[in-house]
Structures are given as structure tokens and as C-alpha cells.
Amino acid sequence: MRAVQRLREQRQPGVLVTITSVRGHSPREAGAKMVVSADQTWDTVGGGNLEAVAVERARAMIADGVAEPEGLEIALSDKAPFQHGVQCCGGEVDLLLEPLAVVPSVAIFGMGHVGLELARILARHDVELHVVDSRADQLTAERLSSFDDAVANVHVHQVPVLPELVVGELPRGTHMLVMTHDHAEDAALCDAALRSDRLATIGLIGSSAKWARFRKKLADEGHSPEAIARITTPIGLSELTGKVPATIAVSVAAWLLQLFAANAPTDHADQAPAADVPTNHEVS
Image 1 (tube, one colour):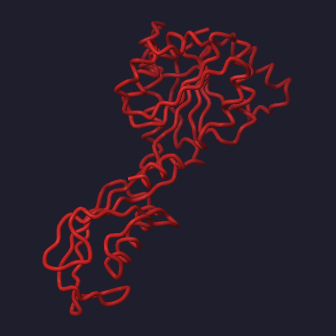
Image 2 (tube, rainbow, N blue to C red; image 1 turned 90 degrees about the vertical axis):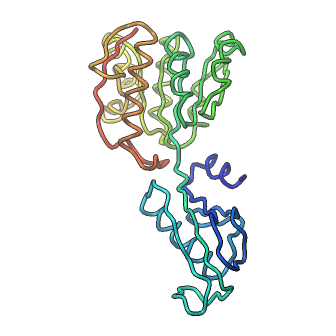
Image 3 (cartoon, rainbow, N blue to C red; image 1 turned 180 degrees about the horizontal axis):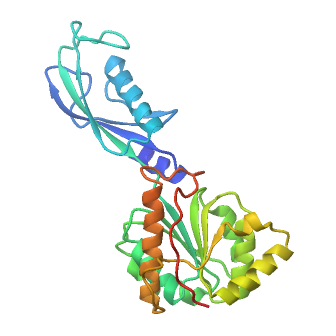
């Protein structure tokens, strides 16, 4: 349904309500669907008490962050209990309420060896994946063909000048990873990231020497120690070592998956990570 895609694009949670079975008479047939958000509905499962109860429960699920589907059985009889008016069609309806969670959003700046390997892994997950590079040859159809069967919704940004401008276009709550080929570009991206209030986390790949230079530069540009501390570096799992691009990519992907799990059941747009996760990889 277009409403499901709309909620996903707007990063709003919702619930898909489906009539799974009908016994006797009902306003709608089995298979009828509606989508419910916190303040809107699309389509209908039959109106009246039936629909009002479904909407009420769906919005309670959204408010409580319920992640698992639920079933509802509603009798359409003047003898049955009702909350929002009598509905006496004479049948019984079974409903399935399926939460539509806000999926994580990740932006990888730099599609070199590590960035491409990481993107390949994340593309196998239900995320909004933004891949960004200032070099056209890193975003060719051949290189991006590994996303042809992606589960993720992949957004490609080829920005030859000022790639840091992409930061302002990212969905609120994005996990941003900085790993370009150019330390000057990395520094500009870190500066832009710290000036943004849209990001859930900021990760920087690099050595301790690189980070020492960046800390000083960012401080000179007016960022406070507390703001600079928003940047996580090195990134990845401390127990998974190695400098091979595929190994680093696995480590960083696992680190991100831990962040997603810490924020379950929904990764709200303005929610910061709920837990600190060990980091490891230092690649200059």
C-alpha cells in the first residue's frame, strides 16, 4: 500500500490492520486492509465500532512501541460488548494488527574498499541506506550491482563538490559513518555532522593520530569538548580485530546492529543510542 511506503519515507511508525477471516456478515471481506498512524488512517476495514476499536488498539501499540503483531476478534452483534457504538451486522471478524516500525537509517560517506564492503552487508538488512562519494568512479553501475537484490532501500549520492551538504538532507535519526579517501573531506564532514541535530550517531574511521588532529581542528572551529565527544572513533567491535576491509566492514556492521538492537523495537527519529558499544578499528 502507498500509505505504508509514505510512513516509511516520513520515518513514522504505524500499524497495518488486516481482516484475516469473517464468519457471517461484516462490512468488509477477508483481506481488507487499513493503515493507522498516530494521527491518520488510510482505507477502511468497515467503519463503526469494528474500525474504531482497531484504530484505538493500533495507536496504543504505536505509543507503547509494541513490536509483535497482535490479533483481535470482534463480534458484530447488538448482544456483543461495544466501545464506540452498536454494530449489528451479525458476524464475527478476526483482525491482524502488524506494527510498521521506523527502520534504521545509515549513511556511509566514502565508498572505497571498506565503505563498499560495509554497504554490501547493510544492504542485506531492512534499513534506509545512503551511500555517498565525491568520486563518480566509486559509484558506477558495476560497483553498485551488488545492491540489485538489496533488502535495504538504497539511496546513492554522487556529490563531486561539498559532499558535506548531504548531511542536511539525511533523514532525522541517521547513523552517519565517515570513511572517505580524503582526510580533508573527512574533517569537513565531521564539522558538518556536529553542526547538525539530525544524526543519531557519528562514526569516524581512522587512527589515533588522525583523531588527535581532528579534535584540535574541530575545537579551533568552535566545537565544544561535549560536542566533539559525539563522534565515535575508532569504530567497530573491540573483540574483532584486523585491517582487511572485509573484516573491518563486518566489525562495523556488527557494531551498528548492536546499536539498532539497543534502540529496539523502533528507531525513533530523534532517539540517541541507548547504550555504549565497544569500538576498535583504527584505519588511517
